[in-house]
Length: 212
Length: 314
Image (cartoon, rainbow over all chains, first blue to last red; front, top):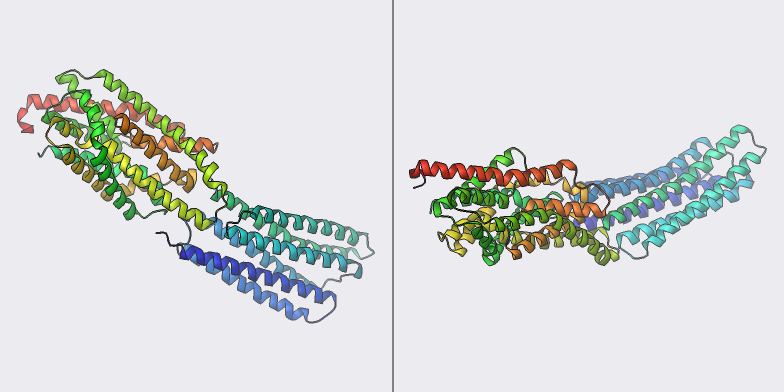
């Protein structure tokens, strides 16, 4: 009655899912950096993003199977699956971003490279904060709320860079079509951190439910 | 001795209906398995009946003196009233049924103790109110003391399972101690059974009802969980058990169903939601009125029948 083997298994899979999503994001970052430096390795990296995202999907499905098999109380299973689903959307969107670069080959001007690199750096930090938040939630750590705040902070920073980058794009002499193309790049990238914040919010809702 | 069969019927009905008040939310939220829950319930009802079951029998005796045949008519009428009201989907209380039946019989054959009856009615009214207050206070206490710690899902689940078992066992004990009088109390009061015999027969009947027929009732009770969550369900069970046990110490058999409804309402009040709608409140009032009246009328009919055809109970 008091064994929680299946629940532990779900938590282990959730940790593995977090690691795998991190790998998807890292690979997507490498891909855009190599694309900006005109390194043709970006094509291989784009395929690698696909492969890693599929592995993340596989872990997500395993979690679903464990939940169906009876891990956690029924009243909490939907919350767990929803959290995993929201985390998985981060990987899905990183893949979408990678595909967008690979398929549409946007022309990224040199004066926008720094904005992109800053967004990449902030995106990495936001995901690290999210991963720490998830782990602290799983471990029932006291400071997990502070880690949630960090995710929100990085997301806000990315929003600011997104706004600045968009302004630079539309002040430039680029053709209208290229401007909107670049705006698509920046918006799609910023969306990844939006999804990180959404996942963190959902975890907080569940944590509140676990309390009284 | 065959007359005890109506007490067994009453106990079976009580077990079938009231097991859901104790372990219903625990079973439907999968905090505890049905078989485990009913096993624990049967054991702790027996312990409660043997150790404290006699406390509420005195109150029934104080309502009016009964002979063996009258005791049989009382329990049979109460059990029939319970069955009829359950079929009509009106929440019925065995405590109110047996008291109504005793009043009905004593009205015909002697004079009821109206002061004792008044005390009982006051306790019935106070049962859901008291349970609501205890539920409210327990919720606040749990919130303030236990949940200062940040717990992960597994820790919360383990805590809920343990507290549900503790609260359920306590609730079963309180049910056995309080409601035993409704099953075999009148037979003990007539001297037909000893207290221990009455406790064992009554408790076994309650256990039998819980094991054989409570599953369906538990399923319908399960929707409470969506209203108050598993934490609230555990606290509601505990509040119900404390309430019923308090009335055992006073010596008045009360309604387990009304105690749990009150406890759920108290928790709902903390959460700022409407845990009990007007329909549910209306059903409680209808149950308060209908159960003793119907049992009393059936008992009067039984006594008249016994006087016209005295051979049918011999």
